[in-house]
Image 1 (cartoon, rainbow, N blue to C red):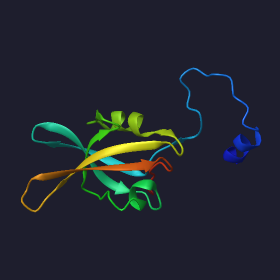
Image 2 (image 1 turned 45 degrees about the vertical axis):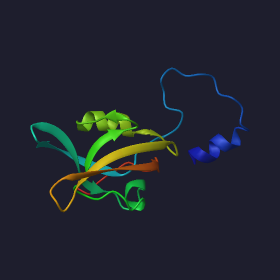
Image 3 (image 1 turned 90 degrees about the vertical axis):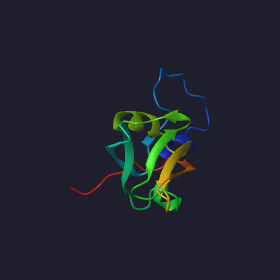
Image 4 (image 1 turned 180 degrees about the horizontal axis):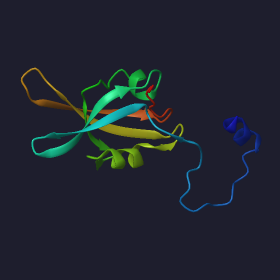
Length: 122
């Protein structure tokens, strides 16, 4: 309903607001857990929300480690939440690491549109 209301405004510019999001906040549907690896705190993908951008990208799996969001290094769930949540439909670029067969880590980058925050059933 909110999207329809914005379209119905006829595209008139809205007065500037101070540091408030332009639209509903959205994420990409990833739940992280904090883990220690190599003496450093890292964020590992714990779960992916069905139908959310992360899972529909086909690139992110449980067990992947978050490296950065939009070029900013991230290692706490609080920092991840602040960096990931944004205006629905806006672009986000996330870099992850995945353990390879030789025991090393391969980095890969995923660009997505924010669409759905992750929620898990209780």
